[in-house]
Image 1: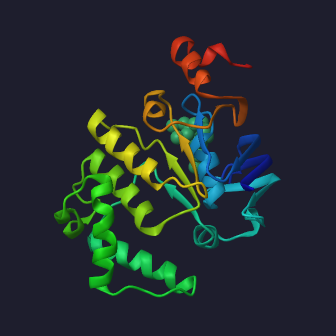
Image 2 (image 1 turned 45 degrees about the vertical axis):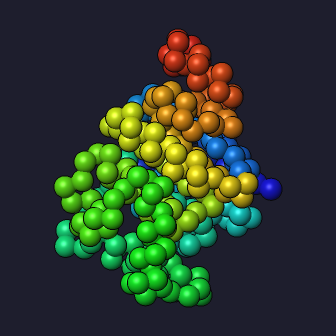
Length: 251
Ligand code: ADP
Ligand code: MG
Ligand code: MG
C-alpha cells in the first residue's frame, strides 16, 4: 500500500511567485526508505516544506495523497496528526522551556487531538526515558532548555528523539547529517534504523553519500531544478560519489 503519492507537484514561493517545484513525481510505499539527493538549491528542502504545508510556499498544481487522503487540502497540523514528521535543517531554540516539558506538551497535544490518553510528567518520563538510549543521550539532556546551547550533533539527536517520542508514519529528515561528526552520525542513523518498521517510511534528504552508508535507502532520487530527474538504487549513489551530479544532469 502506498503511503505517499506525489503527482506532478508544482509550487512557487508565496511572496515572489517564483517557481521552485517543477513537477515532482514520487511514490513511497510502507516500509521503504527513500533518499533525495541533489545539488544545493535544487528544491529538496522546498519539497519537504511543501509536503508539510509550510506557508512560505503555494502549490500551483499536481496532487499529493497521504494514507489515502488528499494532503494538499489538509492544514499543517492535520498533516502532522495524520503521521507526517519533518525534521528541520535548522532547529529552533525555545528559551525557558525544558526539553522534557516541551516533549511532554507536544506529546499530549497530539494525544488529545487524536482522542488518545495523555501522560502525566512521571508516566511521560518513563516513555521518554526508554527512548534516550536510542539517541545515546544522557538524562540531563531532558532538563536542558530546548536546543539552547546545543551543539549541532545534540540538536540532531534531539530531532530524532522528538521523532521517537511522537512517532510518525512518514519521517522526512532534511539533512540530518549536516554538520555531524561520524559518531553523532552513527548514533542518529542507528536511531532512525531502530524506528523503521514494515509500516512506516523515511524520506531523507541529503547532499552527501555518507549518510546512505548508515541508513540504507530502498531508492535514491536525484532532484534537479525542482524535479526528480533520476531514480535508482544504492548504485546510483556510487555513481554520484564518483562522478558528481553532472553525470546524470539533464541540463
Ligand atoms: P535545496 O534544499 O535543494 O538546497 P531549496 O529548496 O532550499 O534547495 O531551495 C531551492 C531554491 O529556491 C533556491 O534557489 C532557494 O534560494 C530558493 N528558495 C527556497 N525557498 C525560498 C524562500 N522562502 N524565499 C526565497 N527563495 C527561496
Ligand atoms: Mg540547501
Ligand atoms: Mg535544503
